[in-house]
Amino acid sequence: MTPLEQLIARAEAVLARVEAVLPQPPREPDWQRSFAFRWRKRASGGASWLQPVAHVAQIRLDDLHNIAAQKAAIEQNTRQFVQGRPANNVLLTGARGTGKSSLIKACLNAFADQGLRLIEVDKADLADLPDIVDLVAGRKERFVIFCDDLSFEEGEGGYKALKVALDGSISAQSDNVLIYATSNRRHLMPEKMSDNAGTTHDDDGDLHPGETVEEKISLSERFGLWLSFYPFKQDDYLDIAAHWLRSFGCDDAQIEAARADALRWALQRGSRSGRVAWQFAKAHAGRLPDA
Image (cartoon, rainbow, N blue to C red; front, side, top):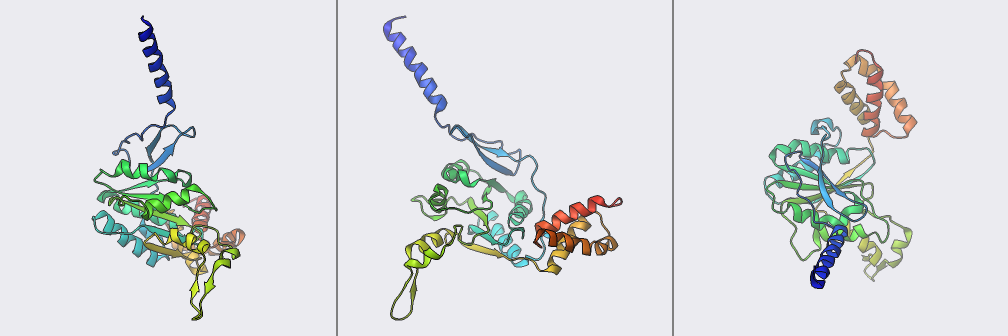
């Protein structure tokens, strides 16, 4: 081997090692395996990919009680989306355990046969949103990017990435992608008394929010549809518990007999949420020999 050939061989070996550690373009997933996917990323900064979800939650819109207005709004928005009509990104905020995430999963099940697909993205991976959008931009399906339990602290990078993905890039948002996010915070970031320090008012009494407030509002404002969720009343909680008990095979007499236990269960947990009602129903029905 000549010196030149040796040099070329060494250069090719070096390039191979460099390519092995460089970030790889996202792999094309098997779109037929599922209608729900998770965005996966190696901790070392290597390959990223869409992982099909083998067992998708089977919750239905009819399973969600006492949030009729929120359910109607997101169902209509999603129907517009799958039909190729204008639709909005959606922010669902409010009390924990009231059905925010379940509502998005139920919409997926309702519209999957019409081409709706869901991609779940962790907050830590929001910087990859442009790659995800590019990956699905040429597909005929309609994609909801799902960000669950979203909130940001000061200075987190994902905050800026989400702002750009929603409405801040020089490129237009892909017409087959929407973002649905849930959060316990209305504006997705902690609110402090000091935020109001920059607020001013003029001689007419008009208030002008400071820059800190404006920055925090600017992200949530980019969602076209806001849905708020509130703590359930006692009767709402019992209605949800009864629904789930019935789904586990309990009859009316058993459901009526379980009311006191359901209230004690909620009292012990300090919450009358839909999640607590579901947990009670599983525990109670599982103890009944003929349920």
